Image (cartoon, rainbow, N blue to C red):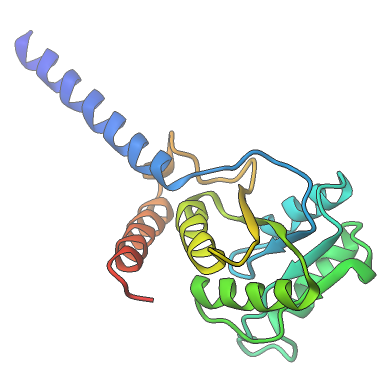
Length: 192
């Protein structure tokens, strides 16, 4: 009986630890109307679906897509297909902007967004990203935009497969969580 109780306590403790590890990565700021809604180009179409929903709800005037420049054998960059996806989802083509410089990291995306926002005179944005990427995104964007008069809010994709309650039940969940913690620790230690 004592062995069963110990096993149950260990299993419960492990579950709570893993759930907290996933929950730590997920942050969400209260939604508020802003000038620009920013969609980071990594990931699948979930980010764009969420961004289009926010645009249709009137949360922003313009949609900003970051340019990664990674076409992976395709004839056009990912930003072009994301732009078409946004239009298909009901976002006006006139309200879509693409950052001018290709970015290969979240830090470079934040720098490109800063350039675009300062050029356009925008002072507020919501950044849409995957839940597991939201804490690091908030840290990077707030560091990059700090002191520039631009407020940034982070909005993770709702209804995403990555949830704190069960991310550890899949290989993809483990790979992404370990990778995200490594990148978060690297960023905090100064590796950009």
